[in-house]
Length: 204
Image (tube, rainbow, N blue to C red):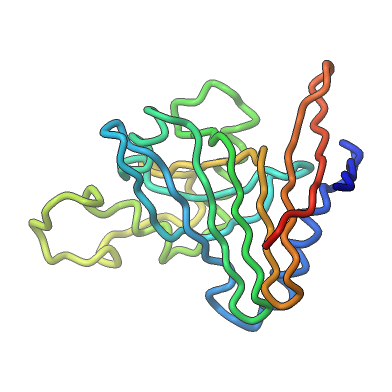
């Protein structure tokens, strides 16, 4: 099978396919939601729907906001690898994106990462930010007090419970059900750390 290699200085072709799918499905409110699967310490998979917050600037890393008290954080401490499943209902395209996740909370020692965390926090709506002031997700409910009863300074930085995730793709499985085309993208790093992508056409 023919193989094509992308330059590490340009966007991998799978990101171009993804951006095109996002654009063609932008009239659908759910197009920015995808499923994120992790593996827990008990060996069982866990899956949930999260929101696409864009790519880390200058990279193909996918950004996700989450609560540091959520189960996915414990899962990622056990196994840092996760997989995204993203289906676009209008264009009939599916992306399965696999790779390790970098967890960035307030205790991170990297100043640049903390700046990225704060930028993501301030880019979120007030309604979304208020959710991080609520009780621990997944625990039994002991109060009927809704999150919007809490107050928050819109100019203040992220609260301790806010966490930023970056999934660094190393494998992407793309399927277009309209054209019956399936492509597998695999990344490798050179000696100097540059990421190189190769692609191969597969049977659907």
